[in-house]
Amino acid sequence: MKLLHVDASAKGERSNSRALGRHFIERLQGLGVDLQIDYLDLAVDAPAPVSEAFAIATYTHPEARTPQMRQTLAASDALCRRVMDADACLFAMPMYNWSMPSTFKAFIDSITRTELTYLNTPDGIVGQLTRQKVLFLTSRGADLRPGNPMAWMDALTPALKAAFAFIGVRSPVFVDAQPLQFADPEAREEALARARAELDSVAREWAAA
Image (cartoon, rainbow, N blue to C red):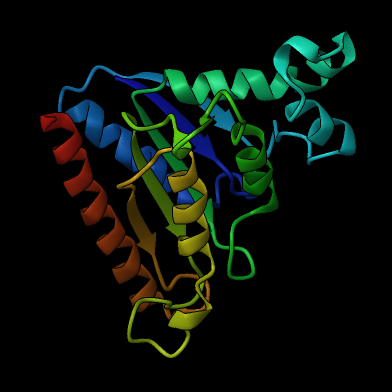
C-alpha cells in the first residue's frame, strides 16, 4: 500500500496528532500491511500560499503556459502527483482556532488543480481522487463532539469534507482526539485512548481490504 502521510502540526515531539499518526502506522504494519510511506511534514516543507502568478497559471490551458508559468506550478504539479499516486492518505493535524492549520490550507490549494485532481466536463466537476482511502486524524483542545455546547464551532470537519469531496473523495474517515489541551488529565487520557481505539479499528479495516 502506498501511503501518503502528511503531518500539519507546528509542534514536534509534543504533538498529539503526530503521535497518533505514528500509532496508526505502527498498527497497520503490525497487521502485516506492506507500506510504502511517502512522508510530508508541512511544518518543514509547506506549500507556498496562492499568489497572483499561481492563480493565473493554474487556469491557463497547459499548452498555452509560458516557461515561467510552468515553473510557478512545478511544486503544485509534484504534490498532485504524490496524492494521485497514493493508495491511501493519512492527514494528521491539530485544530487551530476552530479550523485547519494554514499550512494544510496551502496544501489543499496546491492539490486542487483543474485537469489534474478534478476535471471540468459537460456534466460538471469530476474529482479524480476516487480510489484513495483517506483518514483525517485531528487533535482538538476542546470537546466539539455532537451534543456538546461548543460543537457548532467545529469548522474543521465540514471544510475538510467539502474540499476533498470536490476532488473526488467521497467517504473519508475521521478520528478526532478531543478534548485535549483544555481538559483535565483524566479526560485527556480518555480522549487519547478513544482515538487510539478508533485508529486500531480503521487499521483493521484497511488491512482487511
